[in-house]
Length: 406
Ligand code: ASP
Ligand code: MG
Image (tube, rainbow, N blue to C red; front, side, top):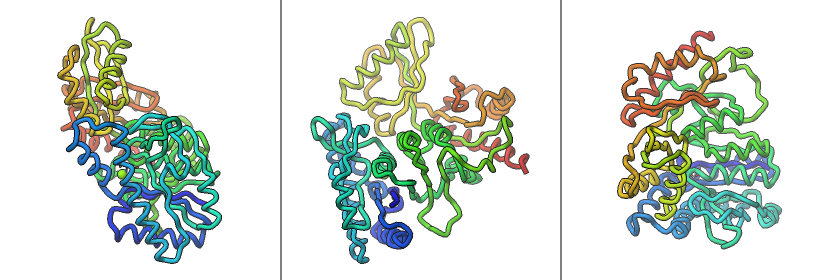
């Protein structure tokens, strides 16, 4: 049995859904049973969000989840129809029908339990279960919830864990994890292997290739993830697991860079208050009052005696809501869009490596008002309009590292 997840771009059109059904039918010669988790077709979730915004600038979150989950229901039912048409014994399930139980949060719910009895029963008489990704049902209120943007990956890993699957395949249009977003950096290379920790870093710092939470879940349950292409003949694909052949990695502690990521949409917010701790609470309560989901707060630091800066990120639509709300609230003195570009290294503590990065990024010295170093890498707040060229420039460091390895 295997869990295979199909990303939104791979099921964008009826034609592509038919192709996926062929791929699954062929895979049935290798696997006895397949759980196929699907995302919504193409940009459906985005369109549904826009639709919700025509009703309210800050839609009720329970109702928003009711709306957004329909996206995955469409692709799940269509794929199942295509499979049945090919003579495959297939059936679709929503998250709730599959027993995916979450906490009570809307738009960013977390899975707290899986009750897979129904799914297991259906597996006895079906070869493929198509599962609508990104959704569950809340434990107490029994409301329909969603798992956060990109959350179908988390559905796939969670179900793989619940059923004891040996691995989880994440099938995407972008056929692997690359050293940078290949849409931005033409010379980006694909990474054959990553550890869970490394992959978690990349996704935490903005790589959209996988849902961050899915990587952490896979790590917790030791489920290897394969991020691979629709086309089975392609040599692309990245394995994420803890043990891998270290062929790609330089010896011992020899440092090297391995990827560049970015949070394109982030905000730097300045608040009048006495301490960092107050600033965090202040943002939390103000957003909650206005039904805006919690952002990911990345850094909080005092800029002078009565001012604190907060650096945060969130899905773009939430960033827009925050940007529209906070400037009208007292004590919020400025809300500035920024991008956070991160360069990831093994190990990042090498001063020589840090110096190389500083030299490369120096032409933007005046525009970078904030940087920090973590065990994840080096992170720079840059003006959004420059983030792409900065990524390209920093990526040259990976290219020279590559050639020096030859
Ligand atoms: N369709 C949802 C989204 O676009 C979930 C997913 O794609 O995983 O965020
Ligand atoms: Mg999607």
